[in-house]
Structures are given as C-alpha cells and as structure tokens.
Amino acid sequence: MLPSRFEYHRAETLDEALSLLATYGEDAKVLAGGQSLIPMMKLRFAYPGHLVDVNRVPGLDGIEERDGALRIGALVRHHALETSELIRSRYPTIAAAAPQIADPLVRNLGTIGGSIAHADPAGDLASVMLALGATVVLRSSGGSRELPLREFLVDTFTTQIRPDEMLTEIVVPAAEPSSGGTYLKQERKVGDWATVGVAVALTLRDGRIARAGIGLTSVGLTNLEATEAEEALAGAEPTDEAFAEAARLAAAAAHPVSDVRGSAEYKRHVVDVYVRRGLARAREMAAA
Image (tube, rainbow, N blue to C red; front, side, top):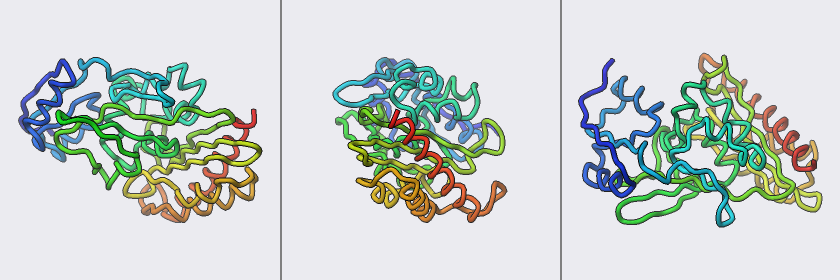
C-alpha cells in the first residue's frame, strides 16, 4: 500500500523542528530513520498530514559521558551504538543488544530515539534502557522535561510524549566499577522480532549486589521492568539461589500471549532461564 498524502518539512535546526511540531500538533510526525514510521504509514496505521524530517538537525547524534551520565542523542543510529568504543568498553548491556537489532540495513538507518518513541514492546533498546535506569529528555518550544523511561512508556505504541514535543536525548547513569550486563534474545531467525528478550545489568559492591536492573522484551503491552526481581536482588549476595528467585519473580511479572512464536507458558520459562543466565554472565563481568 501507499501512504496517505502528507506535506514534507525538512528542519535545519532543533528550534525549527519544534516550531513545526507546535504548529501542526497531532497532525505531524517526526521522521528520523523511518524504519518504524514508514512501514506504519504504508499500512495506513499512521497517516500524518505533515512529516518533520530532523536528520539534518545538528547536535542530536552524539554519544558521550558528561555530568555523571552517558548521553545518547536521539539521532544516534543503531550501527553507531554497535561500533562505539565507549559503549563496548563501559556499557556491556547496550553493546550486547546493538548487533541483535533487526538487520544491517535497519541498523544503518534506524535511530535510538525513534525506536524508543515508537514504543513497540518487541523493541530491544527500551528493555536495555529500563535495565540501566535510563531517562528520556523531551523538548518543546516551551522548554524541556526529563522522565524516567518506565514512566515514559504507557502502552503499546503509546508514550507520555506530547504532540508538540520531540525526544532529543537518552540519559543513562554512568557505569560504575564492578559492573556487568548483557542482552539475551530469542528469535525465530536472525533479524526477527524477539520471541523473548531479557536485558540485565548488575553492580557489585563489597561482595553484595549494589544495583540490579532487569528489562523484558515482547512479554507485555510495553517493555517491562521486573521491579520485584530487582528489589529482591538489592543488597543480596550474588548467588545462584538469589538469581533463581529473581528469575522466578521476573517470569511472574511477564504477561506474554500465546502466538505462532510460542505459548505464554513457554515464554515465561524463557524469561526464567534468560534472567538466571544473564545474571550469571553479568556477575562474571562485574567480578573480573
């Protein structure tokens, strides 16, 4: 199918993009990589009257540590995450997920901001950012605000972003010493959506777990943060028994549906296995 008629606007600055969004409101959509929006438009699931192309807006494609946090611009392509030496050396959960996103064509064009704003519960990066305790920066002509990602995600394809706002940055707490993490993804074939995905982040201090983060993909109406499992791990010794209990709690927090990829019971079992396996791998990294 072909998309419905729309007017195309190419913004050269962030202020220009925000002004266009303020003018056209709910009838406008931001075009970045287009890997989510264009298919939605072709299927007539989305039919904006105005597209605001932000690919030439400067200052939105950086990856840097600043002010005690990792700051990732909304226009950072998946391929840039995959090849960033900073990400590879200090943020293993992101590094593990980046090469598993779709295929090389999508990774070359798709952006982290577009992926998270799209709010598809089968998307990988939102689970990673939940596990890392990330926040998102939303800008409008009237100012900016910062929200924890867990609050930003509301429902399938639904977020807290207002029609006049644009997601401009993802902020991740800076990596601490004695930390580790990974992303485990089950897919029917390379490049497919996840049947189940589990993101894990772990920080050890004085022989105990200072912080644990667990994000789940494709087992709910949104990407899920397994908060009860995280709380059970906080302050505990990093033992296999503690990991098994956290895995049980994470599986209980999942709400998958039975479909062609597997039954709900099977998917919960995969969550259990992946959480235990991911925590064990993160423990090895943190202790190294």
